[in-house]
Image 1 (cartoon, rainbow, N blue to C red):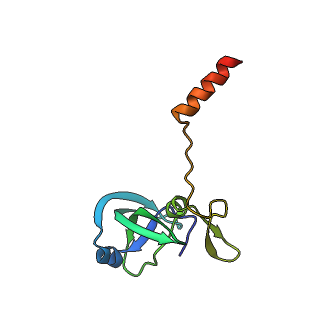
Image 2: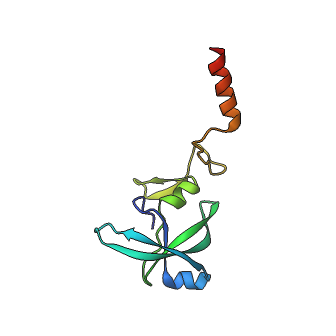
Image 3: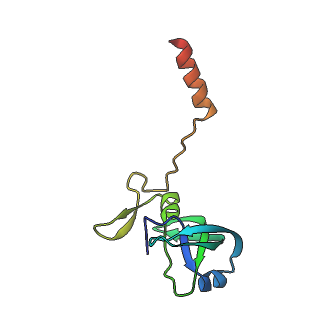
Amino acid sequence: MVDTGATMLVLPRSLVRKLRLRKMREVGVRYADGRTATKPIYGVVTAELKGRGGEFDVLVEENGTQPLIGQILLKQLDLIVDPKKRRVLANPLSPDLPMVEVLALTREADLDSDALTKAR
């Protein structure tokens, strides 16, 4: 299941054991109904969706829990959700491979900016 309100990839404990993932740390979790709990994070799992793959940490829930795809996986693989058709698609603006957004300037861009400022 895809849940754009969830942050992480969530898997049931039985699947995490089958994959032989290693416990890395614990985090606090807030559920939709307001409950909070401490849950383990295991990793690292390689996940592929719509022909795009990446490595992800996994939040572990009890057996019987439905696997859940959250925002981190969607963002890292540059996937979008079409809620009307209830499907996940590769971002049409980057159909060939995931596009990563970098918000910091590179040193080269900083130098170009400095040159523009001095030229004024």
